[in-house]
Picture 1 (cartoon, one colour):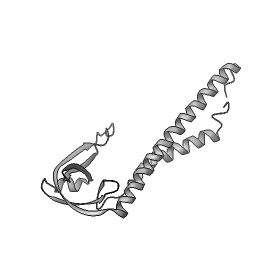
Picture 2 (cartoon, rainbow, N blue to C red):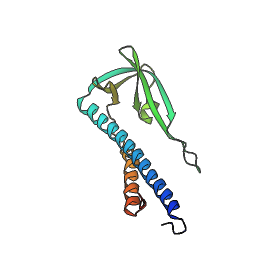
Picture 3 (spheres, rainbow, N blue to C red):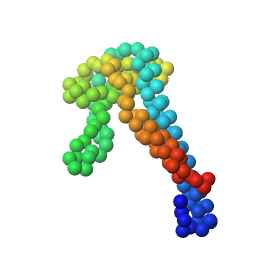
Picture 4 (spheres, helix red, strand yellow):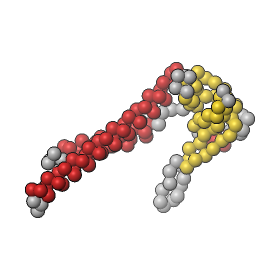
Length: 152
């Protein structure tokens, strides 16, 4: 792999490549856990949640990314704020709901008392949450298969 390096150089570069693979594996494992936690939590609220009707106290729109370089299109995450048991809460809403709703309007949400989590009644889990962990695992296994960490 490194024909011009001495055995000490090969050993150091081998240890460094093993360290990089371990770091990549740890990051991929963390992202997988977070994506699964989000997806399974969403499924639990959908199955066990109770439908509540709450009064919207405010709406917010936050940027979800920087947009593309060429056309600078911006994507947003929309949220509705409301009070539940005199505590401020938020729930994710769609862009159409953001345009339609006004403060003091009523909106239906799913509430899971065990998780203290709120979801909109029409929410679906985001499949793109699993894209980064899957890509990380494929890259990790591909590098291991190619012998990237030969000197471990």
